[in-house]
Image 1 (cartoon, rainbow, N blue to C red):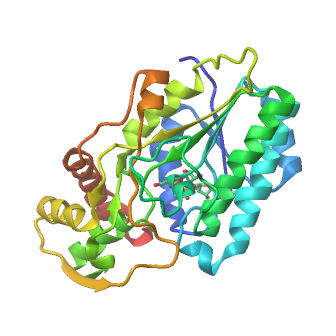
Image 2 (spheres, helix red, strand yellow; image 1 turned 90 degrees about the vertical axis):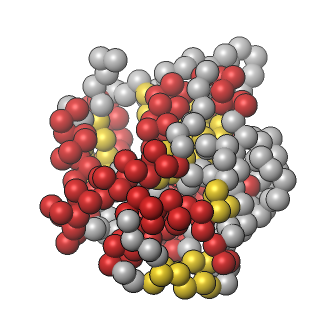
Amino acid sequence: MGHTVVGVDNFNDYYAVGLKHGRVESILRPAGVVCHAFDLCDEQALQELFAVTQPDYVLHLAAQAGVRYSVENPKSYLQSNLLAFGNILEASRQHRVKHLVFASSSSVYGSSDKTPFQEDDPTDQPISLYASTKKANEVMAYSYSAIHQLPITGLRLFSVYGPWGRPDMAYFNFTKKILLREPLEVFSNGTLLRDFTYIDDVSEAVTRLLFKEQAAVGKVPYEVFNIGNRRPTSVLDFIRILENLLGVKAILEFLPMQLGDVRITHAGTDKLHKWIDFSPDTQLQTGLSDFVTWYREWHMHDGAHA
Ligand SMILES: NC(=O)c1ccc[n+]([C@@H]2O[C@H](COP(=O)([O-])OP(=O)(O)OC[C@H]3O[C@@H](n4cnc5c(N)ncnc54)[C@H](O)[C@@H]3O)[C@@H](O)[C@H]2O)c1
């Protein structure tokens, strides 16, 4: 679309740094994206980058992710999800960007059993610190938008998977263990239901949202959207599809439900579809098949790092 794109990541070691650099080398650099390495908590570095690049649009995805890790290491969530987010809001306000889009999470819906989740459902009882930082981002963004008339959009992402994904997520770990013939830890007897969303669908939705003008006249220019696949699948069914694609039977070790986990996630996407004429729809079989192809190749070349 003729835009110059600049990225920032602190390349922290929450998971294999080689995978993070691999994404830069394989996806970003060939597309002409220049990537800067610094921490978004460093307000001065961020301000300097904004001053030099004068961005029109800001897509903020950096965060400390993971529900379970937030029980062990709360501090990194306070730093990366609250302080860094505050710096992004402030820089975006000062430089009057046209649109700030940021990643929230389906976890803001807490342990709600009322499905599908709709954007106007209650989200004031998050059951992990991770979820509460994402909820905090939404309300901080709303107030910046209201006070400064800054167009901002929040993305409630639902279990994103695919090539170059996050190795701490269950699907990634399952694949690794199935291939190594090691037992998989399956919580809640595999009955947890997740709305797995394929990465290319997320990219499509985010690109459409970023460049969509908000009809701001007379209202706060803030919106939030579910980005999910509308089809919750049990973790056990998910494992069966993976087994078939890998051609190896999984060894299952059933464990009780974990702290902070929710029973079901299920995205209602009517609002998204009305707004951008698109909603995620890739079948698990198709998306996982692409993931498995990528995984095998990555491990052949760089497996030691992931
Ligand atoms: N993957 C999912 O299923 C999912 C679901 C819901 C929400 N999200 C949200 O989507 C966003 C992207 O998720 P992801 O799965 O790609 O996670 P990821 O961990 O792969 O990507 C986040 C990146 O941010 C960087 N980062 C973290 N703290 C930083 C800081 N202080 N300064 C600079 N860089 C920093 C990390 O190094 C990492 O490369 C996150 O905000 C996450 O919370 C993801």
